[in-house]
Image 1 (tube, chains in turn brown, green):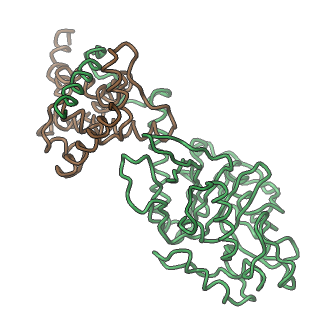
Image 2 (tube, rainbow over the protein chains, first blue to last red):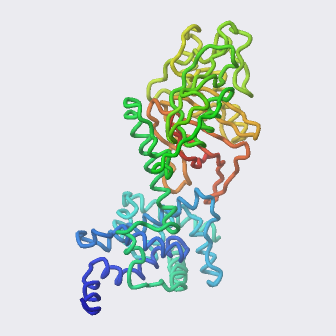
Image 3 (spheres, chains in turn purple, blue):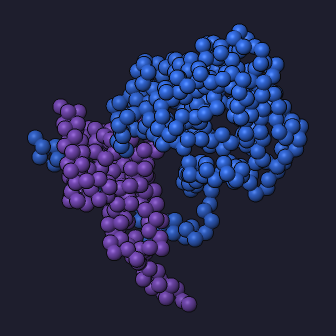
Length: 156
Length: 332
C-alpha cells in the first residue's frame, strides 16, 4: 500500500475527520472553561480518546464531544480543588479589564462558571447547557443569575 | 447593567481564547496509544484514578461477597506487586493497637483479616497474637488475623484502660469495653442511638469482633475531632462522632478514630453541595464496612471559591481491605 492510499484511509476515519474539524474549537471551549491552555489541550485529547471506536455510531458526535469536554473540565476543576492547587488565574498578558473579569470568573464554582461561559461566550441554548451539565433548564437559569450577580458584586 | 457584564464577559473570554493557538497535530495524540499499552507518565494520574475507583467499587459493592467467600481484596490491595507475589515474614505485632497493626500489615503488603477479642492479662485493646504466628513467611497479599486483648476478666471497674488519650467512662467501667459491642445499629441508625444500648450489654459475653462500643469514648472521639477541627464543628452535629472506638493518639500527633461498623450515613453536610461547593464526603456505608477517620492534628484551613473549609485526611477502610487516603472537607 502506498503512502497516498494510507492518507486517504485516515481521512475516511470518522474520528479523524471530527478531530480535524472540531479540535481547535473544542480547545477554545475548554480554555474558556478552565482558563488554562495546557489543561484545555489535555481535556480535548481525553475527550477524543473517549470517542474512540464510537464516533461513527453516534448520531451527534459533536454534541457528545462538547458535553464530554464540559464534563472533563468539571472533573479537572474538582481534582484541582482536591489537590489544593492554587486557583487558576487569568494569564498576565491580557488587558486589565479582561483579566479582572476572568479572575472573578475563574473563582466561581464550576457550574456557575460553565453556564456563564457557555451562555454568553459559546451562545449555547439553555437546553444545550442543561444537557451538558446534566441539570434542568431551570437550574441553568439559577446558576446563570447567581454567577452574574457574583461577578457584578466582585467587580463593583 | 446585565448587558454590560455579559458583553464584557464575552469580550474577556474572546480575548482569553484568542491568546492561545491550539496545537493542532492533525491526529489525536492519544489515538495510537488507545490500542496499545499506555506508557507511564502522562497517563499515570488517570490509571491511578481508575485503580482507586476500582478499589472503591470493590469495597463498596463487594463487601458482601468478601464476607461470604472469605477471599479478601488481595487483587486490589496488593496492586502492582500482585504478579510477582513475593513472600513476606509476619512481624511481631504484639502490643500494638489494631490500627497500628493494620498499618504495619498494610505496609508489608498484607491484609488485616479477622479481629477477635480475648480476655487476657495483657493491656486492653492491644494485639496479643496473630494467625499465622509472627515469624511465619507468607505470600504478600495474605490475610493475617489478629487477637486483641479484652483486658483481664477481673479488672472490672478499675483497671480497664481506654485507649490512649481517652477518659474512662461509665460504659467502660461496667466491664471489658470490648465486650460491649456485639451488634451494630441497623442501617440508617445514627450512632447516637447506640449510646443507650451499650451500657446494658452483659459483661461476660465474649464478642467475636473487637469493636467495643462506648459512648463516652465516642464522645471523647468527638471531642478530639473537634479539637482537630476546632470551632468548625457545631456541638453534637458531627455525624461521625458517636460510632465507637478506638481513639488512638499516636506520638506524632495524629488521631485515628476507628468507627467500627458504620451503618449510618456519613455526611457532614446535610445538603448536597453539588459539584460547586468544593467536595463534601457523603456516602451510604454498607453496614459492615469499617470506617476509619484519620485526622491530622495539623489539618488545615483551605479557601476555595471564597469559602473556607477545614481539611482533614479521611481514610476509609473495610476491615481487611484498606484503601488509599483521600481528602475530605468539613464545612465550617
